[in-house]
Length: 111
Length: 308
Image (tube, rainbow over all chains, first blue to last red):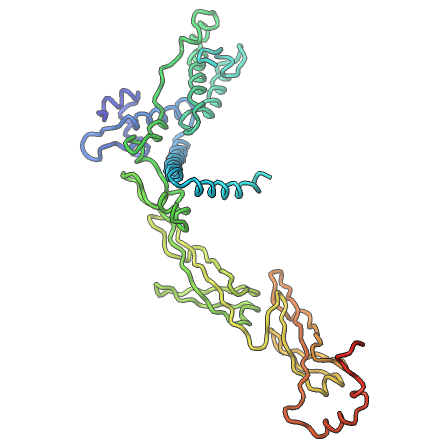
């Protein structure tokens, strides 16, 4: 957990910018009451937003869209990973059956 | 390739490129290779590191001049490994990024499949995000009269909440067909869209008409007199009675066509009606007919079970 001051310092951000990002929902502090605290993940997320804004020239609207899609991608990737773990626990014959079904669906698209 | 590759090559710019051109080249590459924009691509990080290192030198006119004079080399700009957001997002539940994750966009997968309901229907993490889901589809079963199915009609359904729903039954609908009324199902959750009303159509058979694709078939009883002498008879069709001419000497099993009196098609045309004649003798024996048949030489000579 990072104290507010340390977070701003390491993220190289003004407190007012952090507040604006929290208000926009781009950052969600670990704590809902009392002094704000952030995690290392929040710090990395703040750096990503800075990269988008400063280095890649994305405006606020663009950042909101990117974050939204990125959060969906990570949700999807986690779901996919859970599915892959669940599949690996199945018997070999079942896995082969699923593979065949997938292959059968893919074939027409490749033609 | 190492991180100390020539920065001009890394960014793909000429040695005399303007600062503006260098910035543009960097942005284009960074957009493509930023590790957080390529969550599953392991190469993106190394590539992005090279791009950042190159831009660190060339993006700053003063540093660029020193590099051009050979005072610093590319390796001097190597930056320590950074923790990217994706590293936290890919970590387990303790990674701290999970509360940002969203699976709302995939709720549609959860609707009809138990496995995907398990994946997308529940929220794995805690946090402030709320569930937004499409409402469930509402199934209905609707009996439709044969002629309504052929000609089209409007039927009123009563919904569970007491309201009613007027369903336009398209002309030509078939038994077992499904009608989907968008947004007429159960309301969505958390601002999600409503589900659909799914109406399974059951067409009630007709005592006279039978359906054969876009055509209608009926059996038409005719008298012996009508069959022998021909004549005009009234024939029922899905859109009302029409008069049809029976040719002289028509047999049982003769099929006559009435154009355009079949099932309505989508393009506005209709199929045809096929009328199969069936000769009906009088219900009670007729002495005059018996006498005629007994005296009728032509009838005795003709054997319909022999060829010719």
